[in-house]
Image (cartoon, rainbow, N blue to C red; front, side):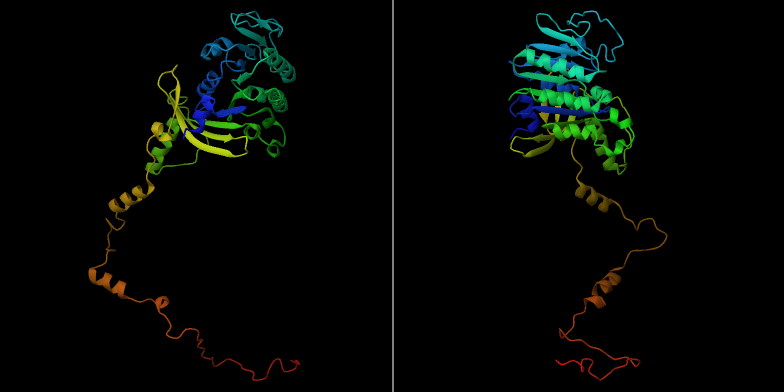
Length: 352
């Protein structure tokens, strides 16, 4: 049976809201763009650019679908009053402009409620099934957590049977509510997003997992309070994916697999985790090898080993708790000299 991740990438498994959680150690953009590129040909693709410039993100999207861009990258805080039109159709004053292939509107993250109306109006104007792609939900959560969830709820009401939301979320970036008093008593935005998503894909670095397995073999596993960014981080060719998929029937399917990419522009292939990480260490085999090669009594100044005669005497010794009684159910009691026995019936005054 094909892995769930492969079915979702191919569009064979319906999922209205796909959330890709990544971190500094491993980016989820490669997987997110692959999911986006596999959208049906009759879909309108809407790119919400919050941390990637539209002219850099647009060439990475494969396919000939009709595309629209929501540019929240060029002027996120609204500091620039006038934005000149670019080759992708970016317009000033947040007015929509269309060219032959792309419609672009420029929004700020300072007012997500206004951005919500602009995005929903853009979706309605497409008059077709759509796939909307957020390159970073974290930028919206930094501005306002409630308004971000209202944005997602508004888009969800417009979803058809095949339309879907694909969003990247950086789980190691704090949201706006993290800096408020008593923030520990509130639900974390990351957990809330995972709850409403129909498919949660947590992307992890294959090199980091490989290093963890190597540390496990050496017996140097330690708790990680933070991670170092190495040259092997954010690998484009492979990553480990933990998938949690909620079906319409209510069943939840979980699996862990990986993807591999031969070239930077090639197609992703879903593979087994250990194809990119290496073999899982055999605990029993490791213990057996250790017991055969290590002798705790070696190199001591005194002798802990038993002779053959001593070992035979030890094995023939019957310990007290191993002795069995000849008659079962009998209680043997030897009264002590200090015991005080009363022959009177303690229940003599009772009319029984």
